[in-house]
Image (tube, rainbow, N blue to C red; front, side):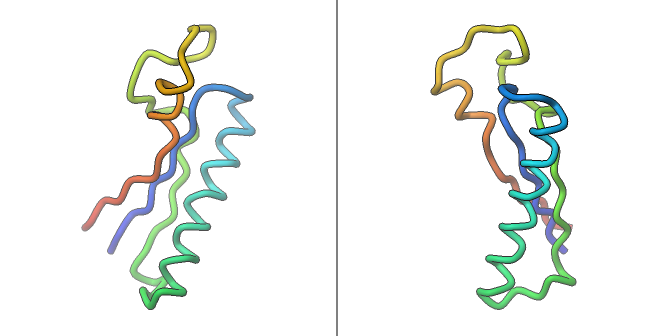
Length: 78
């Protein structure tokens, strides 16, 4: 089983970012399903802006490069 966990940067509202990451992870699951991986073997999880990789949280001035680091999809294999 693979967890497909998607993340956003901190720009935008928390609810918007949560929804965006949910949609992003579901999109990745759909893509992988089209490539032959059964959806029953994948779990789509949206983390929104809850697991930032750096200090670019709300109110912190960051470069685009730093924000980009937080926009990602990670895979965990169980």
